[in-house]
Image 1 (cartoon, one colour):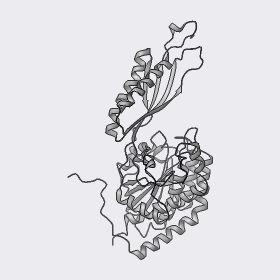
Image 2 (image 1 turned 45 degrees about the vertical axis):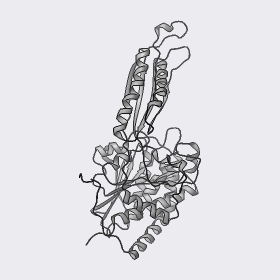
Image 3 (image 1 turned 180 degrees about the horizontal axis):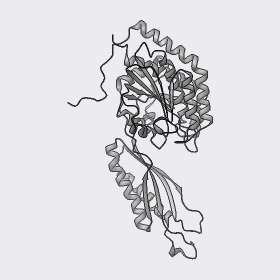
Image 4 (image 1 turned 90 degrees about the horizontal axis):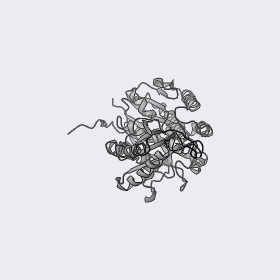
Length: 396
């Protein structure tokens, strides 16, 4: 039998009285930090920055962590908007993820401002335990989660290696414990044709817009033959300049999702054939460029997730969402790639705002305010308590 690379020897569990004392300290730390955490979240929300452009977000997050005594590395591993903050020298390493990029045109409609504030709060709470629990507490400011694969690029340069637990909470309409994201590919599609006057010389043109139309028609027909655990969707970003000029260039961005990276490879090949059909029929040149390496499916560390759910419930969170919410945990994330390397969890923390849901303007409005502030505090506390219990008391 192959050994599980995520397996860890269980640390001795803390005694009940120690557990209660630790809980009180965590909650007191987060209560004390709450005004600053809310301020950080609201500033991020008011000044959204898209993938790889999160300069203010990275600086504000670094400043907040430095204020809690963390040693902060900016431009981490050569990425201008990535940071890593560390406190402690313990042999057991906890890594908290701070995603802070926003969506083009939708701002923080995925709530990354809440993710960052909750991770900063959890790190501040854990800092007080670093020496006595033999911990190194680390926070990673990870750019470009909404397309761009910031964590994947960091992984390729050695980030996250050796963490005993990587964790974060992600806002959603309701609390849901286990993330089951799709693996996903992100592609830039470009057709090149030849422009001509659409009325006087149409025969001299090679219509790049027609190529995209043929591809999308092919994709629509393909969907009925795809496995149920897949998604194919995208947008055309350039479709021409004037109605009386045959378009010589069209562009688009296309995502393909599947249950695993292995399944994704086969579906991606079928989707690309649809785009080649557009080029073949019109005579256009086609270029398909990956926007990032594919995001992997998520591998959950179940003992840590069980602890998280119990700790969150002790704070008053409820995980009794009706079945219609069962697909909300399928959104893709580059945290899936991290979970393939180190033990990780990615639970969802609810804002109580259904039917407003992620990537909608209404959800963006709910990512500040009373429910958002509670999600920050509860998320920070649940993450910190999870890390402490998961790792247990140090031996000796």
